Length: 363
Image (cartoon, rainbow, N blue to C red):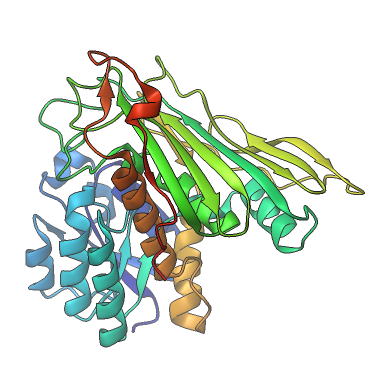
């Protein structure tokens, strides 16, 4: 490698632009190329003054010397493009979700090992101060035995987000609400509480049938391997703007609730013999104009990549964790059975729930 780590960004939408910005700001990184199917001028990226390509193939066949390529394209393209990058001998950074199914995620992990290349994943919510604090509270045993866990994700995604002709809302390129909107929070759940050995799910499509090919809401129940029980309630049917992303934990020694629109503040800390410390401020949310997303923590991702490649540190997220997130999402969809309930159906909740009782987890 050269003195700086040379990066290229594939996919220059909202998140890809964020990647390019974070790479350019990092003194150990150098942005050497951009790739998108749209023209550079239309994307407003001429300020970087780097070679611009209309396809990944063009980049890989070019004279540009690149060490790491980040993939910020539609979800359904992640596997093919990440595989192509690894096989070309470069490290790869893949935005969430790493793939849309377990087998593809496993293949990327295996190819990365075979080629001695790094597969970096993007789950920036792990850097949120409330999440880091709760991780320490659980790991240290201060909360004692965990009893109940509730995760609520209530967001708005409407016509301002799902535009006609876009990849968003399609099963092939989007995949589903749990992949695109809420995989960050499923990752946090797995990171904090571990795997589950029971899932049952109920999915609904209340008001997105004209916009998407999949659910907009759901209720999922879990039994965790650590003995706790929990649930995930989610929806993108909230009117006009996001409502909340919250996590409540009931444990042997107390109760905790992390809330706010993006799980960005500790709302309740009632723990035996414990005084809540002052946490570092949480970064602002990603602002996409007509809608908002999770916190602006991508700079931590690239700082960690530098540490891994320069100083042989551990990656912030092991690729096998990314596989587990895809596994959990897949199991949730499998447990839901057939197509989601719509407002034209008669709601019979007990009959519509399909369970995965004691289905073994992927190890």
